[in-house]
Image: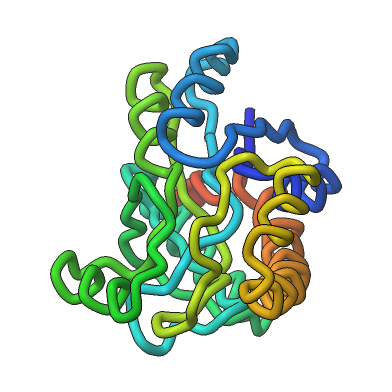
Length: 218
């Protein structure tokens, strides 16, 4: 069984076209842990993929690039992902995805975090997903798409509530942030299209990546 997770409706809806279960976790580790605890554990050997957006912590990771953290997954799944991305001409990076408790908006903070942790990207859910998978004997992978680059500013004080009403209230209370919100929305759509395109090719290939070639007859 293969399951995808998504933190927000904007990540969830495009992923639902891929033909596998998609669990909405909410934003951040607390909501993610709660959402997963309400799910029935998948069958042993299942793969749970932390999907959605990530922020770059290193130069050279551009908005729309795929970043994969194999966590404890089989090396074949990582090698196969890289080969598939290269053949599909999709920008692809392998590296650590570090999870935080809140959105990083301070200027230079992402660069400092990347240098201190030697991590490639940041999100808010993968660590909680990994912990849940370890307890439930599932394989965790993180496959995300870069939304904001290392020095890109993000809107300050964004609410964790992902409803339209919460977004409208935020925009009305902080009109100076509206240009950033518009720019972010445009990048979200482009980035998710790339992630969906990659996963459309990758998910059906997963069952074959662990298969060992038959020994040659002598």
